[in-house]
Structures are given as structure tokens and as C-alpha cells.
Length: 234
Image (tube, rainbow, N blue to C red; front, side, top):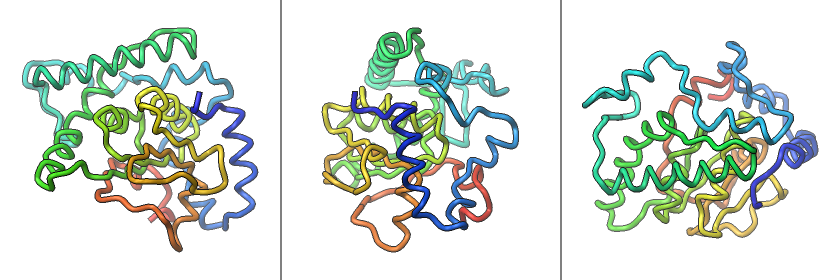
């Protein structure tokens, strides 16, 4: 595995906190999740299976109606054959991942489907520019936009402040890439970075990018992450 484990993450985070200021420690907290008791931490890798798809939101049943729309992420319940093929391939990949790594096979549905809106936008913008744009995503949540982009050969990077989601994203990107996955929670440096990487960055490393960074991306996509953190994060 190139994915980071719970033990790897805890060791790296503890080691890196010595470098951060009080405002950084205040800013990088999943405040909204914490306020409602949403589980932001896991102790065992097997717990990550619960983050494959959390279908408890009130609007989820309506997503499956013919022509259903969910405007916050540009979702419409209508897919081309190629899109359906891409989504089904990723569902099969996740089913295999969860079975072999976590002991229970789970196929994602709604969390995966609603990423088709931003995925279409990125595909359309890339077509206009005549090349695949390099994408950075703060707070990817369940991680399926990044997995879709990785499977289509995009340069992609992300970071997340929520330990449980970060660990799940790491496993997902690990299997969705073709050997180009770089997990930075296992290192202290931005090493091996190029325009073909699928990059996964822990929050403490992202916090240190405020002064200067070697990272270069064409487009930043963010869905709600600043609204889910503390006011200091702005």
C-alpha cells in the first residue's frame, strides 16, 4: 500500500505539530463536524469503511428520481454511457478495496454520483484549454472527484483537515491511480512533485505553504470546506 495508516498518520501529525503556531492550530479544525458529533477520528483502519458513502442526509432519496437535480454541486440524475461506465468502474474498484483492506465490501452511490457535476465542469474547461488542467481540491470529503480525475489522467492534489476522511481518501487515491500516487503524510518534504502526480497532502503541511510553495495548479475546486472550519481558517 502507498496509503497512510492510522498509526502512520498519528505519528506524523504528532511530529509535525511542533512547527505550527497557535492560529494555525486554531484554524485547521473540522469545527462543523465536531459541533454535530460527526466522527472526525478513527482508531483502526477497519473503521474507514463507514466513510465510503454516508447516505443519511435528508436529500439523498430525491437524488434517484428521474431528472432529479441538486444545484449546490450541479448534479442532475442523467448520465451518458461513458459517464456510467466510469462510475461503475470506480464502484467496482471501491468494492474490491473495502473487501480486501477492511473486510467488508461496500459500493458507493450518492457520494460518488454527486461529483459528476464538478467533474463535467473540469472536463469542459480542459477541453476549452486544449489540455487536462491541473486541479487542487481543499477538503475533498469522500474523495470521489479526485478519484474520477485520477482515473482520467489528471494532475490532482488535495488536503483535508479531518483525520478520518483523510485516511479514507488516501486508500481511495491509492487504488484509483496508476502508480502516480504520492502520499505526503509519510514525509516531511514536498518531494517527487511534478505535473503528472496525484498528490495527497496532510493539513499540517498545507498550513506551511502560506509563505511560499513549489506547488502549481490551474484550478482550485472547493465545496464548503471553509464554511466547515473555524473563522480563523479564512
